[in-house]
Image (tube, rainbow, N blue to C red; front, side):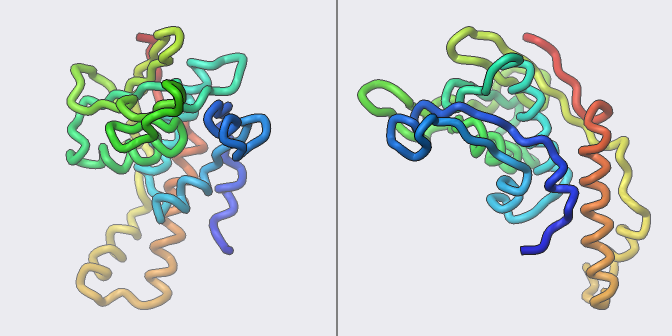
Length: 199
């Protein structure tokens, strides 16, 4: 399997999952998500997928500064509707990592481990997403804006050719390389694209 090597340099997200421990998936319930995991799930790597990963990484580090984030104990809220813009794409990545879902998630086992109703849309917040611990109520608003990480101008030229079906194989290959170079720069400049505020 071949993929951009910068994927391997991105910080992973360590979680503790009581459900996986109870059901014997992982003996200690401890595991990690890496960027490659979410790229496989999404089927692509882009500024939106990168942003969702970064938002989750930074939010969970804030909420759990001295321990692993507890999967299934995190609520996530969005200002947008799930069908608006890229909210659904972002929500899917965050759901994969945190376990939070709107209504489709695990309903629980003997009154424990429920994952549904932990994700909400159309909420009165002013942030890209709000993450809240269900045990302590501690919350954080996360703001993501990658506009300062501008794409290579050659991308627009090639994209126009792609839309007309006129791009050759070399141009298509170059487009993918340039696309991932921008994603790499987003990760390299996370302090510039991510801002967090305690709720």
